[in-house]
Amino acid sequence: MSGGTPRVISIVAALAAATVLGAVAGAGTFAVLDEDASPETRDVTVESSEPAAATETFANVYARAYKSVVEITATGAGSTQFGGQEQQAQGSGFVYSSNGTIVTNQHVVDGASSVSIRFWNGTTRRAEILGTDPSTDLAVLDIDAPASLLLPLALGSSSALQIGDTVAAIGSPFGLEGTLTTGVVSALHRQMTAPNNFTITDSIQTDAAINHGNSGGPLLDARGRVVGVNAQIESDSGGNDGIGFAIPSNTVRSIVAQLLDSGTVAHAYLGITMVAVEDGLAVTEVRSGTPAEDAALRAATGTTTMDGAEVPSGGDVIVAIDGDRVTTSGELQSAIDAKRPGEKVRLTVLRDGERRSVTVTLGTRPS
Image (cartoon, rainbow, N blue to C red):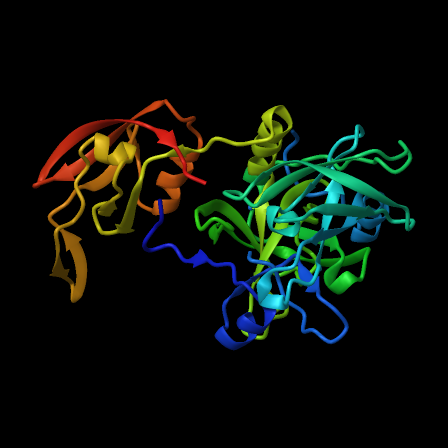
């Protein structure tokens, strides 16, 4: 399901492409091909989050947190595009639990045949990939390391964040491990495009500097709690231009729990595309073989002009889900994400000028 009006942050395949096209790059990986090759980025938002005491500084936050942040090197077989050479992608991550669970981005370890974790003191260990979820760009790793190195960071509540809250990112931008950058929450409820082209809703926008190699590292609040996992940047230059994006900690908490339980995540799926209009969300496509088609939702058959702009016409306009008003694709997507495959939802739609109720049994999002 994809939206219309909200701006969607995209992932691009290479740092060079990001420089030329002015697209959004994954914040986390740069690949080392060989000494003569050009860097390449891989294809690529508890307790409340109230302000810390006045005596708290980010020097204190860093002192408590930096030993929990790791550098990740993922090695995979090279593609024919690069002559079959072995590739290494580098990113960041953090200790999630004292039993050896590490959290990072899916795009950091995508396609890896081996993963190496480097701790703050230079200790390096091999890690096992327990599970990944490309729909939210999250991955869970397992590592056997001394208890003295497994210092977990606490998760905060991303829903308690406010625009203007101070935040900090710790990671390994360009391989410079243990780097701290600070800033504020610039915006909330942004949308990012996941590695499999689905939408990550409720993403956090920050002006804390996020660069290639930061992906998978923590975005921390003023108390040192993880409120997001850094994932992407929007840049004309290919580097940090003051706009970074993080996966929210509330999403991290849910997805990591499922990955630890089964190694996979099943996302609920409706199967439409839509665009925001004055009355709600106009359905522009009903995909074949989806729950939306089974429920006989109707896609627009044409367009009409309203206030000088063309808008879809002739199809359903979704105005509510389970009685709750929706006006943006992000709101509808978040409501669907809160469900599990097999659950039913009641959509209120405007059809031929009349308000109707349509019950949909949600399916499983395709990978």
